[in-house]
Length: 119
Image (cartoon, rainbow, N blue to C red; front, side, top):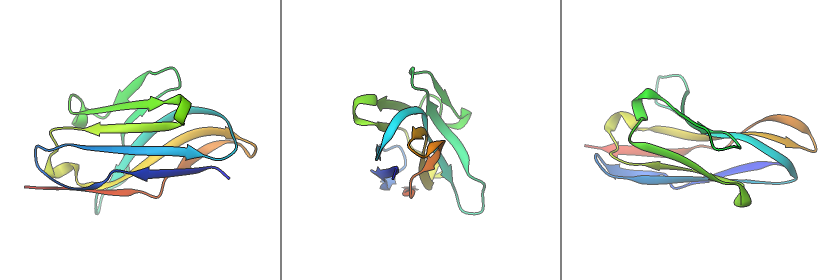
């Protein structure tokens, strides 16, 4: 069974940095796009950044220039380096991956990791 396991969230002061990691495991044939979404209290889940299997990246306007997404295909892992964090970045961050496994191709989600930015 395919699983996405996240790590790296926590509490940080405004202006600080955090690095999130998400490792995919299980019987996988291919991993296509991988990405990070976030959901703040009372708000809808939104795309933060995504990276395709060929390395093309997309970012939400609110994080451009501050966040960097990358992936290590050999480790089936995607990272999100978050710099110059702001209070408005506080949210639960979810990893997402488009994976083709023995159960077919579908989206998978991690359990979420809390990021809290204090002033």
